[in-house]
Image (cartoon, rainbow, N blue to C red; front, side, top):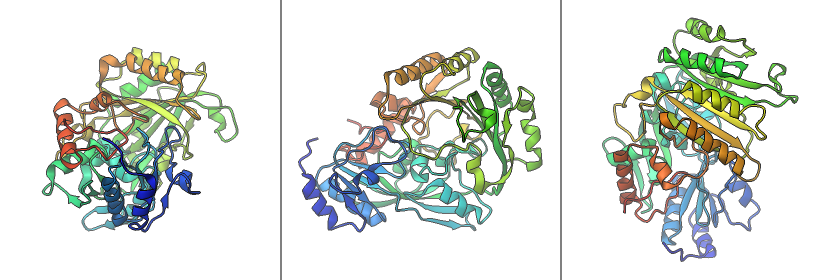
Length: 458
């Protein structure tokens, strides 16, 4: 496709049509508007539209389509994949409304709303969304990619709980799609990512959870605790969702004294069964190795960010995700050794226990791939300004270690650009072909550029 428009023509068109700010590289606000949580591979658009509502999104998409320019979307920018070079970037952070219907146990969530705001709004009614571990992540893009949340083993993927989606397609239409209206598009949007249009809001189901038993146990990293966690998860009930994070913490103020300078294994857990049974559910793990620090407690779901207690400051990172049929002990032990204190840069190895409700098809089928996976492994490397050969090599070595047990990839945990054949690995072949057909129907020229794009079927 040939880009025939000039930025000045586009700016004039947008300035007449949108109420939010319009920025170009010459604008003072340009860098702030295009920069999100992920600092590697930032978007480089010709124009940024700070959308304030659905009509701004519609106008921006229509103007871009009129000028034959690509469009990308950024809510809070945690998962930027392929950065936009030229074209129109629509920033949705100003669209951050939440409306809860406690009688129907639903919430309407606008495009730029972070999970933390949804959690707080639902908690006022004793309800909870299928939110993730980081409250600053945009709820809508997270859900479009599937969404492995804190209660996923009991309730399934976040995408399984979507009732309705509103989006703007490249023809300038505002569509409200559900199981009865545009069912193919509804199927694709829930788990297929953001390739099909610009989502402006969604209605999601909420679950009757007000309190959980949650937090983290910290151990010295090593094969013993990894094997103990693996054994513990094999018999875990659906009420128990957990993940293990392996990293070397610096010996600096601000890091808890018990963890400073150590290669640690953090086991983050959310127990949604009877709260008084939570400590018993954790007992086998507590007995497996000395606990360096314990933050487990009964807590309101409104404070669920404390379970993983992830960093909330922007930084640069790349990752390789693997959906695994099983966790091979020898490969896991090797990976722990390669990512320990001798590594000359920072890496974070993340494991999530899957299965439970995630293994079952929802009442209304969606595009979420590889439901048979038992674990999700994500190897992340941190870099200040650009990805490094050493980081890429480590991620490749990790993939090779687990190749025999790898079913595919997770879109939501793939931080960085993926080639088309790598995006394909997130889905079954028939589902990927169906996604490509939907893309061809709603965006045949491929104007909408998602983090991990689905190409139109040729």
